[in-house]
Length: 263
Image 1 (cartoon, rainbow, N blue to C red):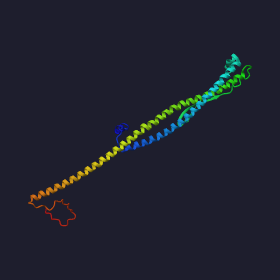
Image 2: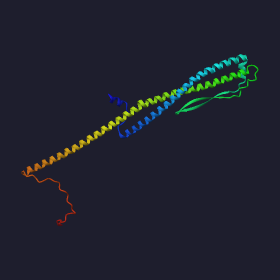
Image 3: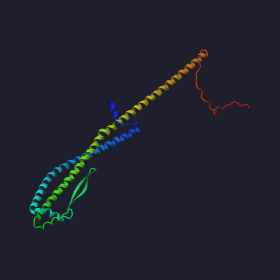
Image 4: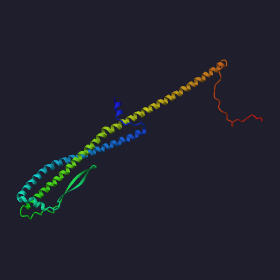
């Protein structure tokens, strides 16, 4: 039952030693990548929890700021009367609250960060008004604090959403390497090792067969020679020849007495 599962969960590759070496390197790289991604996921999760706690605290503070701002606006309207909107609009000619977008690098993940830029040039323009000037400036200060808190909360929530998505992607990669890539590479390595062992056994068996065949051929040759000797002995009237040997080739340089040649 384990063989079909292993055959399904391995790479389709020809079993060679070169392929085995390459798969071992890939397995080592996958293990290292898994460890790095695991550390990255842990760091992102830690930052995620810190931001979650900050968001909880900022939301509680935001309620207090908005409550104070609403009360201050109601007080300013009561003091200045119906001319509040006209007085504020007439004194505004350029924005005094701006946003600057930056980034924060957390283990290679770029997180958006919003920074408020407050200009205090028009903070005392209404101080000289005879009716509600100080109350309007106070309301403006309270709303500025509420805006700064709102921007910080928006920055934290944007970072929270970005981190949540990155953590999900990182965890999917970690699980894919741990439960798919590494087992598949390990099964393929086991398959190649088993095939190489099988090839070595087949080669050893083949060599044994060749050696045994050579021994059988030598024994058959000896038996044929003995049969030929016995046949000659029977042909010569029962007298067996002394031996059947292969004469060594003569050396022409070692012969001293040569016969004369007649032309």
